[in-house]
Image (cartoon, rainbow, N blue to C red; front, side, top):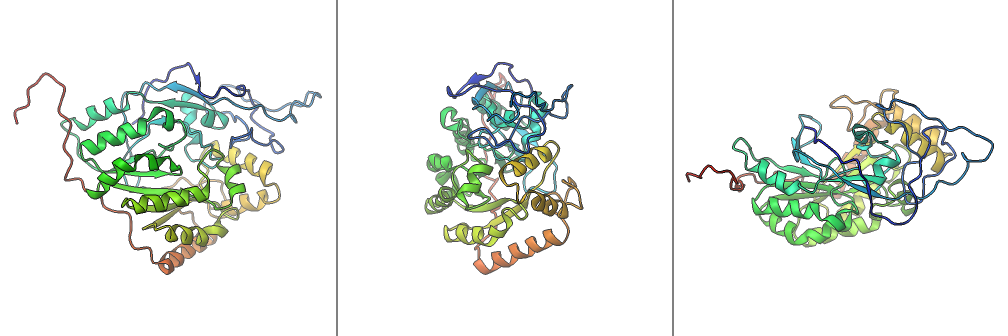
Amino acid sequence: MRDACVTATLLDINPVGINAVHDASNFSNRLPPRGRGAVANVDNRFAEHARECYDDGWGTCDAAPTPLHTQLAIDHARSIISYNQSPDVPFDRSINPYRGCEHGCVYCFARPSHAYLGLSPGLDFESKLFYKPNAVELLRKELAHARYQCAPIALGINTDAYQPVERKLGLTRAILQCLAEHRHPVSIVTKSSLIERDIDILSGMAKQNLVSIAISLTTLDRTLARAMEPRATAPARRVQTIRTLADAGIPVGVLIAPVIPVLTDPELETLLQTARTAQALWAGYVMLRLPRELVEIFHAWLHATAPGKAKHVINAIRETRGGKDNDARFGARMRGQGVYADIIARRFKVAYARLKFPGEMRNLDTHLFHAPKSNGRQLELF
């Protein structure tokens, strides 16, 4: 189910810097703009014209990229719950209050979705954001529908529901309040400590077995994290968030996502140990996948930020994907295949057992749900 209609006007929410235009190719020596993940704006797959960097002798290709505004626009969505039939995920429905994500994670699988808006999955994805101001209104309407059947909703799966703009807009909190009011189960994956703001709601839902949280970790290396996920919460602070949620009685686990061959997979056991010490109840992992334009974005970032490792990392990724940059087949895309992927799977299994994680993701309660009262003119009979 695809939401519809996005306004054309983008409103600045960061007064610093200018919104520069970046070329789409030949950025092996170009670092990302300060505070951003992608090196440039690659052309999206629907673009009518392609662009490439051209050296005109004035050094424009070598110049440092100018800072970018973060811009915000309204997404006039006509529905809020999106449904999927993927066998690779443990949910069949999700809510994304935002399109695009200011965290700027260079590996984000959701980047190619910005192409549907006529924008680049590169810098546009992390600097041109869209929000759904009518999210709660739509949610109440859909929950009240006579044919709606309750099942856990995954909140903020395509883009993080607790990205920085949430601090200002509060859409995620409003959605949680609505779900809590109607006792609807929800699961959340985030890499932001902002989720601690909503402990008052989440702790109440936890007592009714209505919520499950996973904190996403990729690395404990601050330098690597700053380059790879520049506006996400620092790794050590995310670990603290796991402990804070656990202390509040909220079931919380860790998602090692993505595991990047060579670059981050050496930390796998350490990440699991750290999360378990912080009282994570369960753990999972997802191998890096590079759909569509993300191949070019990630490769450019690698060559710019880790040139000595770039070739090794790319070859290792392809080893987990049958020699390709990506394998989108159900059953293979989340874990990868081949010897390298099998070794990582084995390492995870052994570490998980050794650390004695006490549980798996909970089966949330769907029996407490009560639908919002209809606002229609027909009187309720009971």
